[in-house]
Image 1 (tube, one colour):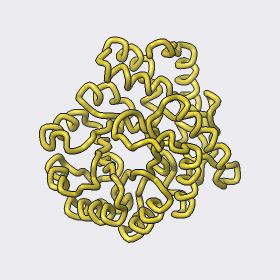
Image 2 (spheres, one colour):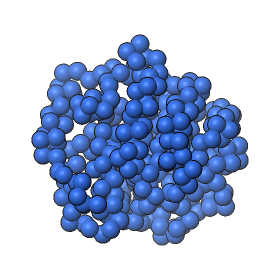
Image 3 (tube, one colour):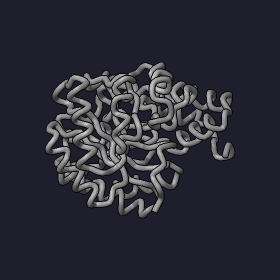
Image 4 (cartoon, rainbow, N blue to C red):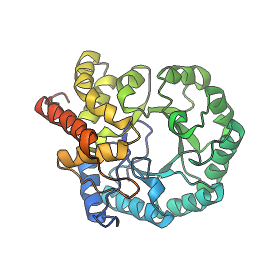
Amino acid sequence: MAALKWEGVFPAVTTKFKANEDLDHAAMEKHFNFQIDNGVHALLTGGSLGEASTLSLEERLEVAKTALTVADGRVPVLVNVSDTRTADACRFVEKAHAMGVQGLMVMPSVLYAADAREAKDNLRTIAKAAQLPIMVYNNPVSYKVDLLPEDFADLADCEWIVAIKESTDNVRRITDLRNAVGDRYALFMGVDDLSFEGLAAGADGLLAGLVVAFPKETVVLYKLMKAKRYDEALKLYQWFMPLLHLDVSTKLVQNLKLVETLVGVGNENVRRPRQPLQGADRERVIKVVEKALATRPDVSKLF
């Protein structure tokens, strides 16, 4: 079984649904294989992009089970934890551990803006229940909870908390974290259109969105940056940027599911209250994708 190394490209995979909103495990199997075959380093199920808020606890476990079956030890499988109540999160992570997932990404409770004391206690409690390595998802822009570098210094005694997905929309935070905690945590850039900047500042990996449709390009961008081939990486990033902007949106799920559909690796089915894009929003995404495909670079010979 592939060991969980906190580095590389971790896709926040979409959850595939049938037209009636039931889980579509066959579509997920196909898509997870597509990701692995194109070089991603892990799979993360049930994130924001995976429409976690519309999934029951049992459904989140079903999606994780499908990912584990598909991965078959080739890459690690992680699950996102976003329960509104700490006790529910503990129950979920215990079941996920028993199922065989290799790590967790833990969000704050999305319905309550906890202060730092509450947020850190929530993390410690979930970590104790899970007994699995944890990536903390720090996204104050969306979830109104911001754990600062000094908070992560305080959490450093919790052995299970090993990584941070940094999504403050402030790339300076990568350097601030390094200065505060050194190499205590692996750092992942969680904002797609700050990928180049985050990796240049020393991030260990990308917890990415557009990778769901363009895994090969995302992995090559990561490899170029780690090889310090910055000129080639910048050229690829500039091509990629209009697509990457689509991840930074309240409609990121609909945006990216439309992108998946346009490149032939998914469908637009979402769970209500979300609905597929219409009108100007839809046309804008189509134009971005059409231009990207018309100018798509050949990255196959870069590595």
